[in-house]
Image 1 (cartoon, helix red, strand yellow):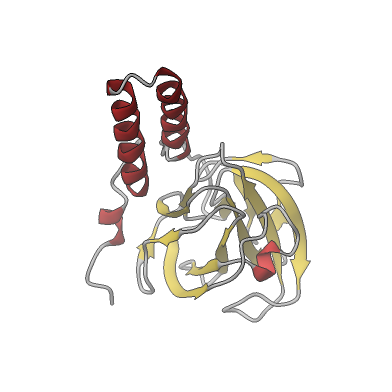
Image 2 (tube, one colour; image 1 turned 90 degrees about the horizontal axis):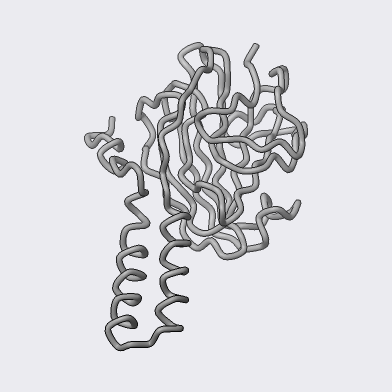
Length: 221
């Protein structure tokens, strides 16, 4: 069993801890430009600092989901809902819901169901635009297998995007997790795929804007 609680790594509301070095660096560079009297550069750097801060924001969410509900693991737009023949870890058919996160969306990821982390799998890969169909097959990605207390398997995949270069995932196998709590993030544009049993009742469709830890994607049978 793990000896360290991963929740100690995510106590950083309202800004993701991983973004603090980027924000501080942007602020320092802006300050230097202002001191040197470079007005145009200062304005541009200030705009960049605000954008970086906006990207790493980490707002609280209000959740009203039931025990059988599966909440969205990410903010963004649903770009696909499809059936797959086999899901990693379970080797069984399932439903796959893909969520694309633009650079304007919150990039902190959240646990979709309460349960226990049964497995993790990380794979290096390419950095194709995350909204492309083959990004889920070729890009760098991290898989998280959560099993509910009733034995239902839900798998979340963090997929790097065109400019994403770091996938962050805090929990380890054996950790107990709660629905809606933060478990990681992907830096600078990406997508998240979630796999649920194929008899689940899907409540969203392609094009729907969803919010991590808040929007109910589907309901388990």
